[in-house]
Length: 202
Figure 1 (cartoon, one colour):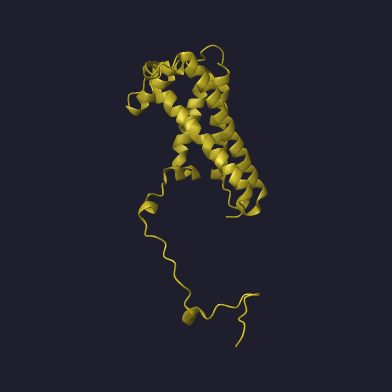
Figure 2 (figure 1 turned 45 degrees about the vertical axis):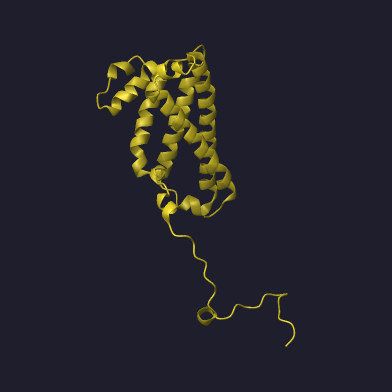
């Protein structure tokens, strides 16, 4: 609305990055190891895909956030519209993303930390309202902190601009076609002649 050049770069970078981050979390937390093994994906292959793909998605997300924050800080109308709520949202997003990447990279050797045997079943147990807290007890601290910040971020979503992720333009699919109407000279008066298009002759 106020400026589009920087937004045209920052917005796609952030949204593509965060979508890949979310997709990676859905696969990592809700797709059991037996499913990927049945598809012929070894644990080492899965680890490499998770490591490099997750890191790339995290870098994209953080880069997009940095550009969006820069835009908010350097465009006066956007900066005036920035609230404390927005600042908290950016802090939580960056914190969760950077901690996730740090935790992953700190266990990059070999097959990495096997979170699908501890964190994943614990996360699934939360949705059944029967949390298996013993599974999270021996998890490395970075992963635990990442999980806590992630849950705080999820709880914060309804109170932030992030709630727009649940808004889909469904009604757009069923709206009427746009109707173009001709200009009514009786109501708006005759259209002024454009230079170079004056009438010739009498």
